Image (cartoon, rainbow, N blue to C red; front, side, top):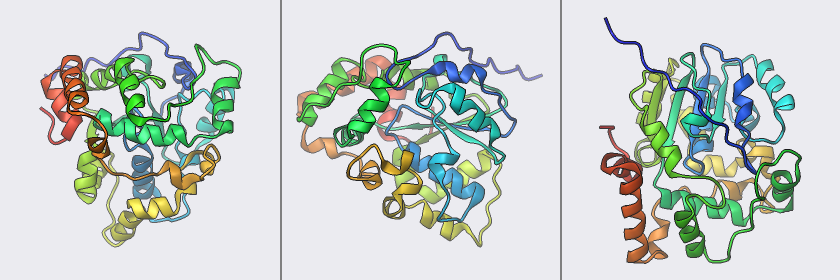
Length: 302
């Protein structure tokens, strides 16, 4: 008789300028819930769009950011957020950036974890951060309930930003290695699917079909080409207000700046050989060889 899985247990709270992990403690799970998890800037918005279009599309007018809330974001507070989530009548697909040990992990839900090379994460994060406006800082730093120091403005030099992130483990956002390591440790659970950003770039249709099978979403072949169109990078950038939080109000350049390049490897023109070697050595030390290799390039899980 098969042994029942050892389901993860929450062991801590994680609260900072972005997070309030206590929101998960009061969430009432449903049997068909979908949880999208990433470190951040790893394809989260793209995944939300793919799942929304597979569930409810093809529909160019889906307000994906409203349909798929970021549960652990502390703004708005849980007294406001949880009733909104509970009132949703469609199949819910919720977002988290938490490590497993700060999350309530439910056997009732299905989870998709998206990985991406940390260097690509930082390049996307810098664009997100350097273009943020005063409203973004006000919401994160001045809204009551913040735990710990405020989030700082980024330096002008993206290499300095990367080195700070590497040396201070995710600064000024949150730790990277803990997030990847915690999800990697449970990768064989039956209700968890790993997806890599590079594999999505390489074969989005194939990856989406695999996700549809995992999530028990029927594929209507007649609708499939338009679903793929609405999940393409070019279409999403041109129609970014539907999928970006608050329609892009936190960025003066608008929602299009949130969906920036969608390209890997931009760090190669800026980082030195020493920088690259330091990152790769740190990745192997923190994650182990197999996980470090997967987070860098994707492919089949060991």
